[in-house]
Image 1: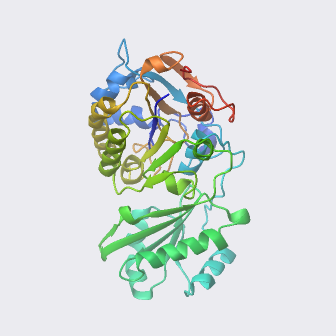
Image 2: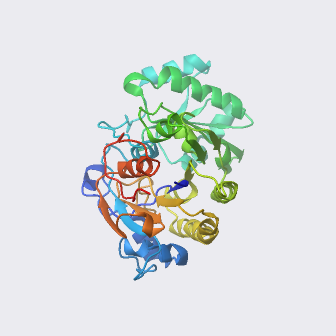
Image 3: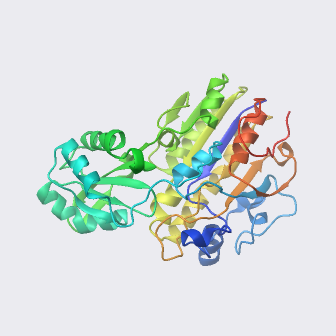
Amino acid sequence: MGNIHLIVIDGLGVGAQEDADDYGDEGSNTLGHICAVTGCKLPNFQRLGLGNIIPLDSVPPVPEPWAAFGKMREVSAGKDSTTGHWEISGVKLDRPFPTYSNGFPEDVIDAFCKGIAVDGVLANRPYSGTAVIADYGEEHLRTGKPIVYTSADSVFQVACHVDVTPVEKLYEWCRFARENVMTGKHSVGRVIARPFQGNPGDFQRISEQRHDFSLNAPVPNLPQTLLDSGLKTYSIGKVIDLFAEKGFTQYRRTKSNDEGLAQILNIMSAFRNQSGNFVFTNLIDTDQLFGHRNDPGGYASALQVIDRAVPAMLERLNEGDVLIFTGDHGNDPTTKSTDHAREFTPLLVYPAKACSSTDLGTRSTFRDIAVSVTDYFGIGKVFEGKSFLNRK
């Protein structure tokens, strides 16, 4: 037994699932379209077997991939980050989190305003995060009213300029919304604080100060199960927020993929000659900065940054360690939509010899990852699904 490093590249899909038309996502293929449009080269992921999963114009298959490869099917209802990470962790949701295509009901907004002592909100409808501050930011500066908006995902987002509402106050407002307003039938997946700065015509979101307030994940779930079994669990990036700060020994929030990759390499170095550790990482830039903004070139560049870090990761692994790459949903920047897509996600497991087969095929559920991790650590059957790892 060694350590497992699980890395979720946020918004990385590899083609529309069979039920994609139910979500308005037929034809989506995040990675396939990025490679076709940008000619993105990913030599290290290519060696691992990324091009063996699906045909990619700029990442061809290799005859002897270093990793086992396949793709994952999401069976939970929904296509947001919380749903994806929870299913990866063994939790299947039979009903999607609520969404609000016409904005939030009057009673929800009234309860929020009363609780935080403000006289109304701005926007209150689905919106792009960058567009909503461009359209309402000046009025927000003038009135002090928070900007409230949502998307196709189950989110209650609150944007405030840091000169009007200090970040800690914004966090208090979002925490109030999470605990007192967005409950019961309005239990959205996430309440998100979105601070921004700048002047009219040049407002910018402060992504590193974004904070997600999630629901408590149902139990059993993978991090809590491992922790309860005496193993060490670590979160890098926004994973800790998606699990409401539960189930982890330690966590490191990050401001960017560069910082996330640095944290991965640091913790791998710290685990030299150690075992019994599970590290759950989310690399968010692909989704947050480029998928939602329909920027395939930026998305491709973010993938290349991760690709360049792969050799350093492999060098730091101990004998017996396992490194897993996957996604949590799609976010195709070449489509008209600026929202997530219902797609298969990639699965790369290094080294290939750790798996039952090099070609892992199409997995029936994201939960196969949770089953594989608990199998690796010698924990009994906890989750539905099938392990793709060989027991040592």
